[in-house]
Structure formats: structure tokens, C-alpha cells
Image (tube, rainbow, N blue to C red; front, side, top):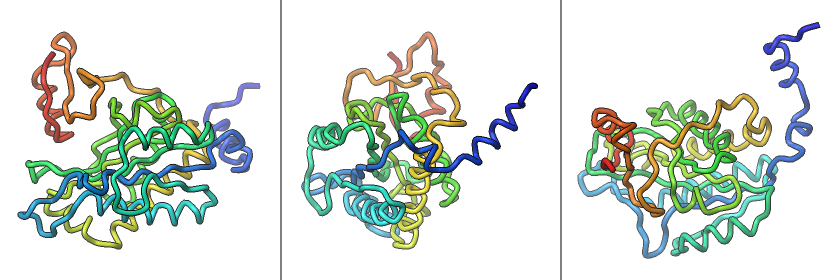
Length: 255
């Protein structure tokens, strides 16, 4: 007797959550971007509200920690106050947690082009794609923000940790509309809840139903965190490059 894929899907959904999550993660390392002497980005004086990235990320991270603890997760934060933590130290903390942990780094965008808006989630290793996908989907669904997608990018905190790691850009401080949203405590709470739901869904379902990991479309020219993308002349046209620059708000160059 043949069993359809649809039937198998619904049978899978009926499995107890505890069974699905036997080998899943139990610890979430939350990384509030920047801190201390490193302010990160800022909204600039022309924005409706003056915002600093390091303050927003810490606030969202604290809210996320509260939501995750309610769900039964063990939560660790790379910083709990306004202090500087080196990127390599953040990686070290992640790598000491063992296999049953994930890293979620929280950031906000700031660019000279104030028209750019939206949310995006970065990952690098294949084992992080499911987490990135579920978080991005949850963020867009709950906030109504423009979906800038899940992007495979070689950042320090997406490539160096040995555990699944993602970096979320939760909106543009420099965009007038998103600036007002990010200035609102209730909106930051919505972001935290959305992040928590995405994390929980990855724990509950794992990578079930996740599409194949996309190809690396924008490898960096060197292993840095520079906001630049490389496009190979043989595989990418200049028109595509400009389209991606507009979408991601980053400067690109042809190799």
C-alpha cells in the first residue's frame, strides 16, 4: 500500500513534541550585538528618534531571554549590560556550550540610504539554515516587516561557532518608519516574541520541511565582517549586483 507524502506529513505533525525534540537543543546563547565602547550603528540625528544599536540589541535580548525561559530553555547571554565583548570571546562562549545549544545574535541595521527597510537573517553553516529560516519567517509574520530573506554570509558569528548560529538584523534604525517602531518598547517585545517562536519551532520540528540549503551566492573576499559582497563576473551580471545592493543595503564589487 502506497502512503502519500501528504499523509506522512500529517502523521508527523501528530507526533508528540517530546519525541521530535529528543536530540534537539536545550540551551540558547543570546548575543546582543556590540556594547560598551562599541556602539554599533545609530539612527543619526535626522531620524525621528535617536537610537543606538547597542542599546536596542540589549533590550531585545533581555526580552527574548524572558520569553525563552518561559518555554523551558536554558538561556545564556554574551553580555547582560553595556559592556564590550570581543567577537572572539563571544565565539569562545558559544563553543564551550556543547552540541545541544544554538546561538542567536541580535543586531539592527543603519545605512545612509534611509529608504531601506526590512528584516533579514544571516547564517553560514548548513546546520544553521533551518534555525535561520524559522526565525526569519516568524519575524516577518509577526511584525509585518519587509522580508529581506535568509542570507548565507560568512560573518564571524555565523562561521566560527561550532553550534548552529544565526545573526538577525531586526530592522533599519535609519528608516523613518522602522525607526519609530524600534523606539517602541511594545514593538521590541513583538520582536522578542517572534524570535522566541522561531527558535521554539526549530526545536520542535528540527529541519523537517525546510528547503535545501541555498548555494553561496556572495562569498566574502576575505574572512572579515566587512559589509561587502563579492560577485564573480562569470556567474553574476552587474544588473543582479545592483539588485542585491538595493535589497540588502550593502556595497558590492565584482571580482
